[in-house]
Image (cartoon, rainbow, N blue to C red):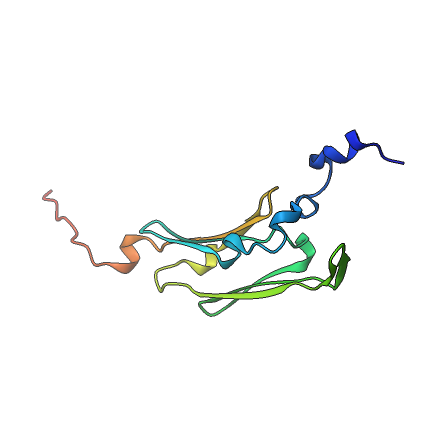
Length: 131
């Protein structure tokens, strides 16, 4: 039905089908990378083992929860079921109302919130002009 040339064009398949066999048990950055700067708070997680509909992102107060879960699957070694829950506490100066998430074509989920503006978090002097 399919020739070898067809099967080598992995870009025809969604990212979650392109996981090399030798990396199938690699957690890699599934643990998450956190960036907390004066401009933003961001989390990046490799969720390439999961289809987009198998991933959930929730915010409860300042607790960010990322979950992935898929049904039991059979491969050449037996069966496997994957799931994870990763929780982060957002800093107080993160603007949770502007929180956004994106999933790229390689299966990397990024969630970021800009920081609240300086004028909201720090006092400032108001210059008095003479007229």
